[in-house]
Image 1 (cartoon, rainbow, N blue to C red):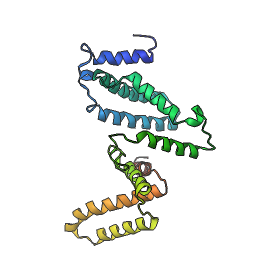
Image 2 (cartoon, rainbow, N blue to C red):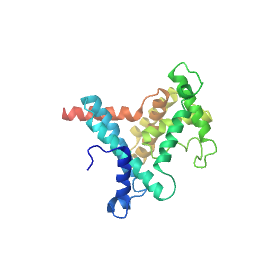
Image 3 (cartoon, one colour):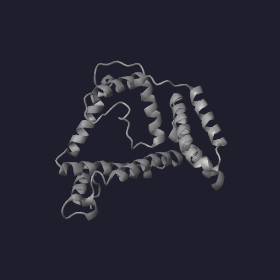
Length: 234
């Protein structure tokens, strides 16, 4: 074992694991089979950021970032075996993107604040995506794999931007009131069917409110869950 492994050493380690004489489990993995791993490792990295903020100890964050990197390199290694692309191309593409999307740093564009940076970023991003065959439509571009409470406000925001979807706080409140009223009037036999429909309407109205006021719905619910846990276990 080396005293200190380099990034290049790490790439070689993953290729060895995927080789004929490597690890049976690693050799069996595909892009599809690794999807749950990518989601779990990303979530654990986000959790590690919280842990670092709460404890000041960055050891877990360093470890979890390594696990995310492992997923990236595994996918790139599989892709190289399939003759699709290499890790070097992944690195080059993201480097090119960062240069292209920061013309105020690497070019002659001038900006006064971060709002202008974001505006330029979105415009450049839009130009990059023009003509891409995998983008079905503006709304379907938002990944289904996102948690629903994260995806809904994003879809709503784009629907407003591209299709002029009418939005108002009072409309959302009216939907919430109506849904609650229907649930209150439902008898036991009707309740199961009503709960499914009305909860769907409630969640969409809540998502719309979150989008209107730029509130992170997923984080809001997470905080309330933590409040519930604290109520019983603190």
